[in-house]
Image (cartoon, rainbow, N blue to C red; front, side, top):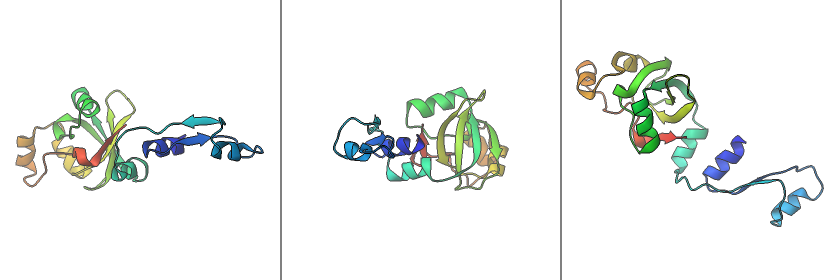
Length: 151
């Protein structure tokens, strides 16, 4: 099912069928109804975001509050340190991380983090001004929206 998810996210129609059954592959290639058809999704994900979602391994998890989760789901928002409630795992700036909601909810998004785990642990829950006092050269975003894929 992950392969079908990847293919349809890339805009490719996908059929899962029994390839061992005589004539099954020929029927699919001829356009006949065979197996289960998954139609392409119009997600608009770039090849970078497809790579990030499916190929770049995550090295940690950022657990975020409900306001940050809503902002990520409903809009094209970046993730700021103020919305992070905990940091799990060890990672460096530039590593991919999963982003999950509180109370054990599943992964909401995946992105490339601008901070290391150690840096984030020092500034979780803080507004940008307070972050800059502790980390003067820090970026505003823990994960910028251009390096984040929701879903």
